[in-house]
Structures are given as C-alpha cells and as structure tokens.
Length: 463
Ligand SMILES: [Zn+2]
Image (cartoon, rainbow, N blue to C red):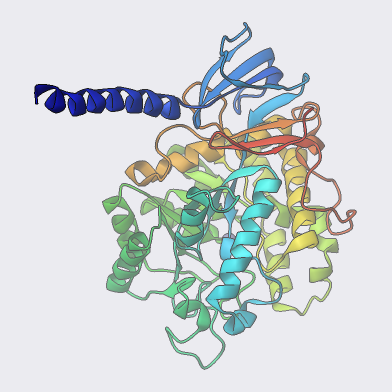
C-alpha cells in the first residue's frame, strides 16, 4: 500500500523535474551573433570597426571588438559590411496607402483600407524601416497583427484619428456633408472636434482605441481643399484641452502646422512636436530649441526637384497654389536648422501614393535629407533621433523594454546590415538622387542585406 502511495509521488516528482528542465531549454532565449561588422551605432560618426554584436531574445546584449563567446548562438558573418540600427520614419499615414484623392476615400471600405495598410507595412520593412510613427488616421489594429507575428511590418507608434476643426485640414468630407457624415470620419481616420469638450472627448477616445499620443491640426494644409493655407486652426483653449488630455496619459501632442504665428503659440501652450512648420522664423526656432521640442519639417517639399513633379505641373490645381506659397515663404528654413540644430527626425509623409511612385519618393527623400544636412545627421534623424522621439510617449510607450534607433547593450534588436558605408554613401540604404524619373524598382532593396526586427530576421542575403 505504501509503495502504491509513493510511486505516483515519485513519478510526479520526476515529471516535474523533467518538465522544468524542458521548460528551461525552451525558455532559453535564442542568440544571434553577428561577426566581422563595422557598427554605426545611430549616434557617433565613427564606426566601431571589426566588431561583433550579440543579440539575445529581442534585445542587443553585447557589442565588442573582442571575440564574443556565445557557443549556442546562430552565427552571421557580416563580411566587413556596416551593421546599423533599423530605420525610423517619424511621419507616415499607414491608412492612406492609396492612390487618388482624399474625397475618393468616400468610396472606400475598411476592408480595402486594412488590406492596403498590410501591404504598406511590408513595403516599409523591406525599405529598412523597423519603426514608423503614424501621424494620424490609424488605430492599433494593424499594430496588433504585426506585434502578434502574423504579418511582417515595422513597430508602430500611432496618434489615432486626426483631430481637426470643422473646415480645417482634417475636414475631408465633400461639400454638403455635415460633421460626422464623411466616410473618413465614420471610419475614424479623422475626427472633427470643435470646442474644449469635443477635443477632450476626441482625444480620450483616441487613447481608448490605442493611440500613444495626439495629433492636432493647427493650420491649413496642402492636400485638403476647404482650408486656406494661412488658416489658423484650433483656439488656444482647444490646444490646451489636447495637451491636458495627452498629459493625463503621460504623453504628448504633435501638431500639423505651417504658419509661424500658430507654431509659436502652440509651443507656448505645450505642444512638443512640430510637423512641417515650414514658415518658421528665427525667434520661433529659438523657442522650439529652448523647449526641447522635436522638429519634423518634411523637407522634400522644398527640394528643387519638387517643382518638376508631374503633380505640380498645373498651377491652378489648389494644392499646387498652396505648395508654391509655402516654398516662397520657407527660404529661411534650411539655414535656421543648420544654425540652431533642433532635434530633427526623418519624416516622409507620403499619402495617396503606392507601389513604384511611393518607392521612388521614399528613396529620393532619404537622398534629399542627406544632401541637405550630410549623411551623418540624416542617419541620426532616421535612427537615434527617431528613437528619442518614440520615448516622448512616456509610460504610454508601447515598446518600453529597450531603446530604439541605436546599437547599444539593452536596446531592441532592430538591426540592418548594409553593403558599404552609409556615412560615406547614402545610396546603400536605398537612397536615390532621382525622384519620379528614377528607374522603377521592386519592393526589395538589394544593398540592405539583412533586416532584423525585435530579434527576428526578416531578410538575409548574406552568404
Ligand atoms: Zn501627414
């Protein structure tokens, strides 16, 4: 009898011991060891030559110029190429990966928008972008699918629905439609909020649907038709309401803005990220830097090549008129940026563009930023600066375990290996000096040889 009682206990103890040993093995984080690489760490201009980088799980564990002992790691020989952080695009619109015009969204279903955003995610990752910051129009649906590992795509930081006023840059309904009646409002890509209480409600709803920060429209825009470019958007009280709502979530407010006076007043009211801001004057630039705000100016609009763009060949086309006004009133911008060196991030902001023209525009944008400010600064914008902006989401940060945009111990393992040295030749990350007249290319960027995100390899053409 005793024996009979004991036996099951022994079996149970053995089973537990065995089980925990198996569990330990299964739990042991996988390791990847990159050898024979020159590391651009996202910050310093000098690369760490002949280095090795050890990844454990989804984090970078060690960077060394000595041999790293990791017998169980998967070994990848970089062949003397550059290992660098995955790129960060700090201004995208994942739910506007569609051709045509904004009013044509009246005829679009969620099904189509969702499928298009999945295509967008794959496109971005293939270009080396392991993190994107959605600057309104998206909730956390796509992000959840990617984070679950069901779809290849970048990490996504998001603003939720665009918050704009009736008749402002976020008002994309056709004439005759009242507030709430347009398809884009129904689908909650944009939300019209007028007055303090609607701003509070709209901002809170965005956070409830997964947003990490808020985006408000503080002046007229180029692609929208109801708002003149000089339009001042949002009263002081409405801006204050947005800032309070974000603060409640330990996060921040970003703004779409073009006009200097609005930019200046919104900085005073606590907005921390300036998107566009092309007509910024010297006193406002000083203020922006003093406040530690981020600047995301979408510089490609000012490139000489933009004038040749097929889109702008009709001067009576309303966006072209606005675009020409902005070019005329932003001649000071580049010099101010060079003089005050604000915290700048890389931002593409392409909407209503897909496939080959989208790729051509992205490749040219990478090139143009480097041409204006040098490869090192451009690469910082695309990596460590973007990572720093991601952290502005505070306790709302969806990826709080490590830093983004840097190669350092403890950072997320979002890593590229590229041919050559991007600090000397920006084309190795896919940049192209030609824009809409560039040779059409496939989704793959051949000089980006390895793409790792969150410790997982999505592409590897190294032998
Ligand atoms: Zn935008």
